[in-house]
Length: 629
Image 1 (cartoon, helix red, strand yellow):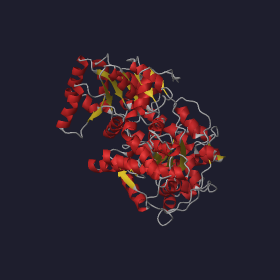
Image 2 (cartoon, rainbow, N blue to C red):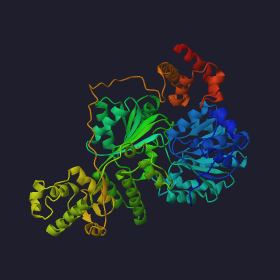
Image 3 (cartoon, rainbow, N blue to C red):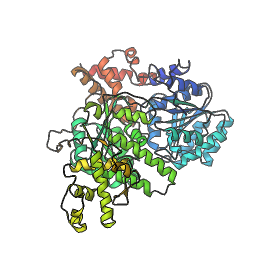
Image 4 (cartoon, helix red, strand yellow):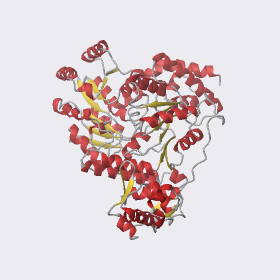
């Protein structure tokens, strides 16, 4: 099914006033208007829109419009409790009747919400897929349906329904019953990432064959992409945080639980406020860490990929990967958690040869069927091509999702174009050495030993196997270990070498023959010098410093901004919500910059809806006045 990029027509007469009065935005962005009009009209839709692109408004505005028209409640299927809490809190702050049902509530709280639901006093209800498919909840939906009070189903993170997606969840499969049981109720399925195969799977499994497909640009121009070769990954990460994001909120992804805990502890020792998050920690500890991340400034969360889906924190200024993700979809989804507010943010990743070997091994050793494995290998190959690229990262990323782009000027390769070198002869030497191992004793060895032999390094293992006698001994002494690791990464990525088992022993594949014959050219980026890192302790780092405003402000405006932040912190504590639920940093920065004097002035600021103007308008003006600048 081809992509369709759509221009937005004039929104329906009901939609734009809701956007302006409730949410405080002057106009829809991109395809939002067309999506909203389509769904308000009672039609099915599949929406692919990047994180931060405004997916929630695509069902929240129709939910309000249809509820006002007497259509009843919108049921939002959401996979994570954190997302429900954030979304409901933000809607309530905007004056929208919203609620959630999940495992954090006791029976009395559940009964109270069910009564509100039957009384038609809730506009949006968030539920997990497990709750939606229980007999009790389906009975409630049946009652609402009979009364004509079931308005819309919104299925968030819809890629979870697909086995081809990067975050498959079996309980999403049961959502096909929505179409079967309530065929007259429109549905909107939303996701930030889905390739052609995943998208087709979503349509089939959710019965969305007649749905209109809306696909926004996948470009996140505010995110700067940077991928570095691993040298000392922890120190590289520390330098990145200290040099570019000191005092900022960020997420660091690691593959294993142990690495999460070790990295969080090490960063803490270096003076970074870092917290661990993974499924092996107690629920109470995970919740405490998540609450701190959402409510405090400058927290760095070190986590497995279990963390982040549905986290609505807009001011995450960086996402870092210390291990290679499984595919581009996962990489895009995870990096997209930075800069949801549209302000400059960074996606940084360090990866190395062992990452490639580990990911290949996990695919090969998985119990999945061969077709699935082939698909996963192809996805990994695409990610490796992105990592090894010496041209624009953004162009490569957009191309993967079927979108054309031009050199962005905001990725590492554009900002500092890397030198390249012809590694064809080096690749032939490496493959020839693997072949000589087999000839010499019929044994296979890993990358470390192969590089030692190529560089002529005397080790006990080299001596044990008599590999100084090989014709390939020392033939690669002119290349550094880092260069050889880059060559092997590419040979494995391109499928000319296969790494097998726990120790990643290497063997030739059928395609290696063409490389050995010189029929394949291998052009690689020149390894960059590892950036000299600094110890954060005792080197000028200060805790508790004032955050730099998210947009450029002069000295007086910065003072106003900090005064507004202090006011917002008090309101957030009083209402028991994260600060950004009151107002985003960008909204405060615009207030500080424009220095509104009246409620009418405030009304013109994007993000200030009527309910918030009524609740907070005079307090904001007072805070600005008391700032005295």
